[in-house]
Image 1 (cartoon, helix red, strand yellow):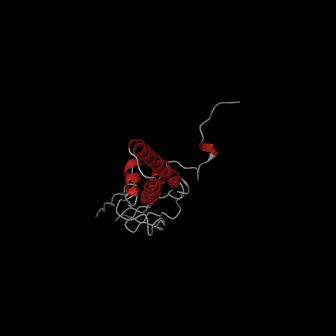
Image 2 (image 1 turned 120 degrees about the horizontal axis):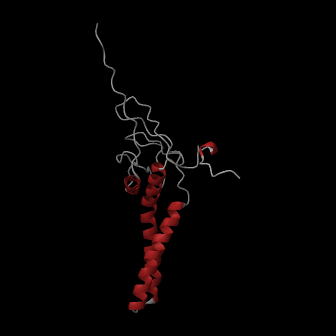
Image 3 (image 1 turned 135 degrees about the vertical axis):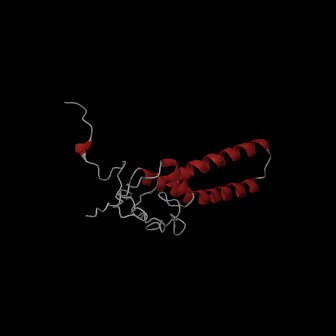
Length: 165
């Protein structure tokens, strides 16, 4: 009588930790595998990662990336304007040309990386369409993963009890 050993069950995939996922998103890489691209065009997110299959079309970055970019660019440009204008006698036409152009360029350069980092943040916490992990590479696992936060899918019955009223 022959005995056959069943193949070991694939280990469930883990989510990438917060900082690596955000760094991958900042660099236009998939927050899960770090290989595929997040964006197909300037701010258009791909429906899924071409390397690992992570579905990204349900993300909801919305207004957070522009708010972060406005905050960063405002502080950088504000500091530079104060330092330059207080330390040097700059002609008005140079100030009226350089500062708006520098503001526009910095905002456009930072918008896509910041949006990628926000998508990495949402992926790490399982928010807004990132409830499922992609199937394991080379495995036959379900790859459903486990949610770790987010408001969608939470149930009031799972809330901690605060005492009787």
